[in-house]
Length: 181
Image (tube, rainbow, N blue to C red):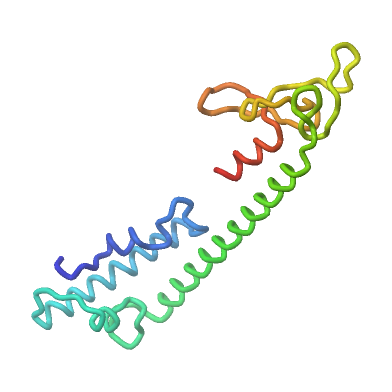
């Protein structure tokens, strides 16, 4: 192809080809691929009919665009509407995920501001004093920040997939890991 547009490049640049698929089902992705293939076949037939050997411009791109309903692009109105619905669903899913991530970041910042303990003799998060014999709480060291926190309320045990073992994290480091992923 000398035109610069193909089904392969369209699907590679498509919002449906993202890592998390943005809430689009496999069936919807397959339908979009079929519609784009149909549009490409129609465009190639038109190009052959006109005897064009190359060239792709903004003018011809808008005239032959898969979303242009004026031209005979091979896509029905129903298919165009389905594509619009799929893209709207993907955008809504992306916005929802962005809001969720924003809330997590806010919660993480609040936890960091509220951390009052020194992380050595007192719990980093709740400021409970650690003792030798009659301790009010048992201390555990966070693997990431190397600070001590209460085992019962201020930390979590989780599986470290890289090491393949159970590790202890304070709630701040646990939230930070979740935000990063």
